[in-house]
Amino acid sequence: MNLTNYYWYFQSVIPHRICDDIARYGHQMQEQMAVTGGFGDKKLNQKQIKDLKKKRDSNIVWMNDRWIYKEIQPYVHQANASAGWNYKWDYSESC
Image (cartoon, rainbow, N blue to C red; front, side, top):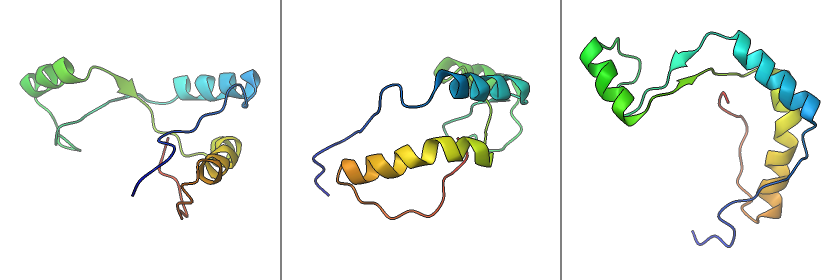
């Protein structure tokens, strides 16, 4: 597939108040160590954790609350159309 637009973005469309609410909500959730490189859901030993942190040292939270998608998804749909991608999709993974 040859794309004309490889990305599409919006500036300042989500109000600062909503962004602050999402950030505040995320800080209340239980962080997880972000994993990559085939580690998946396995329980890691200390050597594996040290090796992983050389490649990726971050903590994340997964959010899939409807109120967050309600704020974001209209822009996903609009970008999909405006960029000419026209992908068919019926759900979003956790953000």
